[in-house]
Length: 568
Image (cartoon, rainbow, N blue to C red; front, side, top):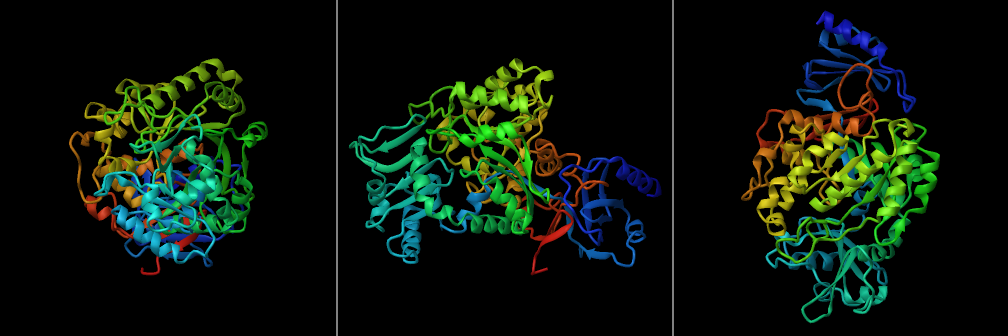
């Protein structure tokens, strides 16, 4: 251990401090009394970690750590808990998570009747005259096995506008009063990349999909937009309670980089935020702010915890609402899905981004959408040689990467494109994906291990508020590839589950690499920033079901304990 200590001290001085390093007090903390997973293959676990200010200064034995404590240092006893590098949610929506805490939450609704009862209870608490907004329904588990319609909502709230969003964020249902409020009729033109669903009699169902939902959502959420600071704070509280130390914020609808930075500098947002600016609004066009951002380049908060250096684009919609773009028609519907991208606008944005050193993170779910993404990325890479780029390896990302033609799997590593995937999508979609795709296409669905075998890394996330946003669920889904009650459907390809070692990388070092932060984050090593997630039990060894019930003991961001579980 003496040699290891010397090597670690030497490496501390060799690691240069990032330009994003925030100011931190020069205090010393020693973490010991549990098992500490470093995330480094050569040194799997250690007894103790010393943090000075916001950086790790020692990783090794308890004896060695205590020798560095000093009179004013603090011992943080893990009491038998298990410490890991800080978990990063590599794809989530900071504003959406917070708004979920402020509106009607329909997560886990078991039927249309359940939605109706929740709406009835909630409507009684909303002041008269105010519109009602909710989100989180998904019909795939319901006995009715159909979308929520305006008539279902009218039966409970007929006298004021109501909009209830599907959990995937790609469809909403609006009641009759809401349709009248929005001015939507059977004759309303359907925007490109959207759908206004009609029933068998040609009447409005109240369901609006993708681009057709964008404008109505903006109108309904207008009142909530005034509460954005409150929503961001609520989101931060949710994230640290669940053990996340960083979120890769994927293109919230508002251009709130300045708001997020100010709240972080004030200590009201406690997690790191790697921010992607919304580059294009499906059905509307490019975000005017994106051009200014491309010209000015990356930005960060004063404390260094918020970095904005990417733009978010969309190729297609979601699988559940049949908006994902497929190469061949859906097995349960004669449609290919909804293309959301404008080729000329996208290629122009992408070329400028590549020249300026701005990362491009593009939503793609269907095999058609993913192939188009790879084709366009390849075209831009060929058009802009490395000597004309601000960054030779731009680390562009494919957000979701859910359904792939197997022939496209090797192209990710060949192009250097990073699949950014959310394991919980697989364990939710397994109930309906076979119907949407048929058995043959499932071989390329949620193909985590196949991508890793082909040389890719995977940045793991949750897509909250589409999913719950719980690292325990995401880790479990990655290693078990089963529903929360242990179910795995026919043809669900268990060989695409990942090892626990790779699952840990999916939420630590691989997201760090995907955000150009691998020198500062992702492992517990000397010189890196002190971000830790501490669980009550060992997620690397306990049974798969037990992963779901381990408890978050502590969350540490930038050397500061931002959450302690009061029950421990």
